[in-house]
Length: 143
Image (cartoon, rainbow, N blue to C red; front, side, top):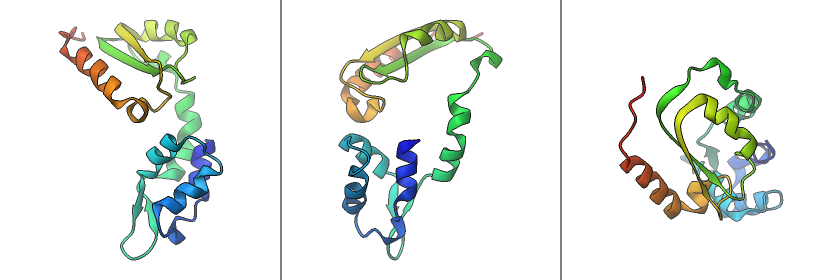
């Protein structure tokens, strides 16, 4: 939510260059890779200034619901499932394993040690290898 709030505070209509937005965000978001990732959603408007390609208000209003999503209401999934986690991320923890096992019959978990939460930005080559290997394995057809 901290990042979303910082993005919402940016006066994007008066920003002349993305580097200006990056400099402002750098005061609150130290991770340069994360800033680059979120700034991909900042697009130049026809005329002057920029606009967000994403609905920041919608994201801000939905974060609590997303975080509290109850998987218990969903049926178990019988197909192959891949979880890829970043070794430096705190979002998928070993304490989640029991819930994963309850929800997904056939799953595998791969951890990319040097990646944070945005694996595709931190370690795209490693993610490509893991994903390709997963997709090359014959799938278990869901019932």
